[in-house]
Amino acid sequence: MSRQQVSYTAGESVFDVLMRATGSGKKIRVDYTMALGTEYIQQIGTIREKDFGTQSGWTYWVNGKMPAVGCSGYKLKSAPPAPNTSYEIQWNYVCGD
Image 1 (tube, one colour):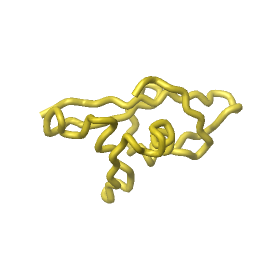
Image 2 (image 1 turned 90 degrees about the horizontal axis):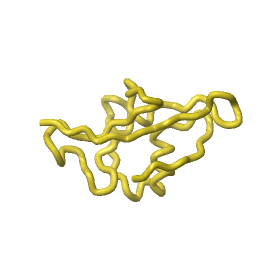
Image 3 (image 1 turned 30 degrees about the vertical axis):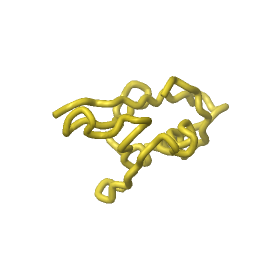
């Protein structure tokens, strides 16, 4: 996916924004992880978890930091026009054996 600007409302999760950015998940494969109580992104586009090693998969970063919570658990706190409402959400694929 290319970089794009997506609107959001306060209280939405990173997962909500990802679903909207990809057209309601048409390019995404998702699994709910009961143990963590969050959505797990298995595939974006044609790249799936474990395609490049047993420990490979998708991670996300918000404003340059990797949160310690799953994407559906990370809530965006404020929305425009409030100050400091910009979030940069980046999805990265990590390779590993």
